[in-house]
Length: 128
Image (tube, rainbow, N blue to C red; front, side):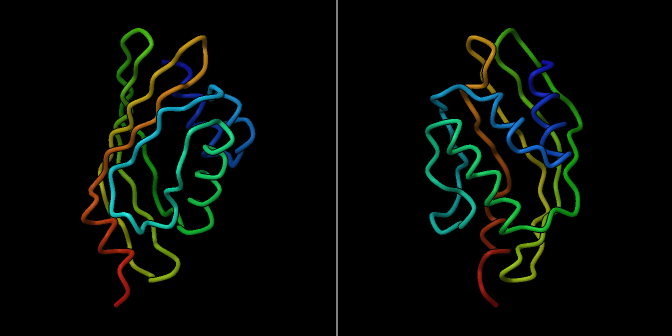
């Protein structure tokens, strides 16, 4: 799915406005996690996706974010990969594989669901 590739190309280049422009006005967003993860806001819109991507850059130092495969079927795609990020407030690393489910309607992303090792995230956020 070319739209998924464009999204991650824009994010890698730091082009947040271009990334946000790929989202529909209403977004079905979910990242199952502990309730106190500071970079996972309530997301319902393209504008909220901008806040989410900004918080990621504010709260985390990305050491590695690698997309290894994009599987597409019509207007759905699954992005597979792995990441390493340091939580700035604790200095601890998150090391996890991930899967991101994207949905598209009328040429815009209307679903963003990320699945990752929530235990690794919670441990990295927890103070020593």
